[in-house]
Amino acid sequence: MIANKTDTTTASLLRRLRRARVLVVGDVMLDRYWFGEVNRISPEAPVPVVKVDRVEERPGGAANVARNASALSAKTSLLSVVGRDEAGRSLRQLLKQEGIAASLHDDATVATTVKLRVIGRQQQLLRADFETVPGHEVLASKLKDFRRLLKGCDVVILSDYGKGGLTHIARMIALARRAGKPVLVDPKGEDYSRYRGATLITPNRAELRAVTGGWSSEAMLNGKAQALRRRLGLGGLLVTRSEEGMTLYRRGGRLHVPAQAREVYDVSGAGDTVIATIGVMLAAGEGLEQAVRIANRAAGIVVGKFGTAVTHPGELFPPQED
Image (cartoon, rainbow, N blue to C red; front, side):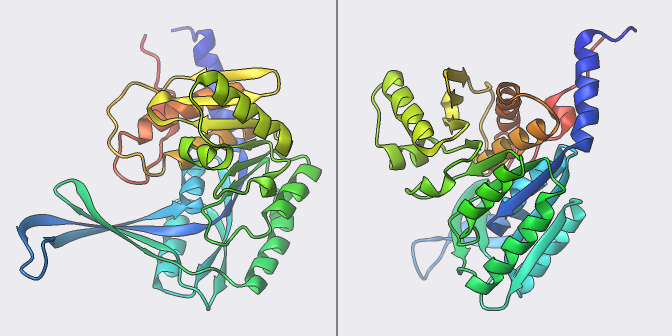
């Protein structure tokens, strides 16, 4: 069979994905799942008793962003802080298995962030979070490593989960832009001034509403989003809108991409997939609008999987039938 233009374009993109170099910086965590059967209510309190029979661990937070980038074949580096504890050691091992070049600074004064989810009858019954903020000294040394790693990447992704690991984010954005590297930010909190000058930020609806206030129409949303983009000097602002898809706001207009129609099983980590996919596509030479379209497709795939998940090139670009 003679390859058509689509086949040739896809083959070229797949080759470029393997050459893409992505640096992820941010708050990492360990996602821990306890699965079990629920057959009775506790005699001590009106809560279900879960007989745990299986435990799973997955990289979470910025580590999940790196995992998503690596799953798309990109050469992925990760810079973050962990505690000198069992969870930190587990996270290191998981990242090694994923082929991620992880530079994880140890901070003996903190515990590695852990999100523990207890699952019974295919439903999440409880989530317990364990976290502390890293110290100033370890964050300063991380900034030195950022300067070094910046030279070997095509795109920088800053994954802010509000855990204190991105205290120097404004400096990181400035350094990356000075080096000519696109900077993508998954934001947190109500003060977006620290993301000034980024190439793209990717808030969800609730996060944007906390910063700009609510809206009652698409026109009103467009005005608020564009005003924020201009005020922060952003190249673009991408609002992820769950079942409504996602909307990219740029100078001169907007691009809305409807959500992929599929059954939603779990939305946790979908934002990580979106920003990782956009970053990898930009590093591979794709334009921003095409990167957003592909990221929307990737999000539609991962929400059909349980927990923090990834998508692979074979899922995003399935082979064409003869």
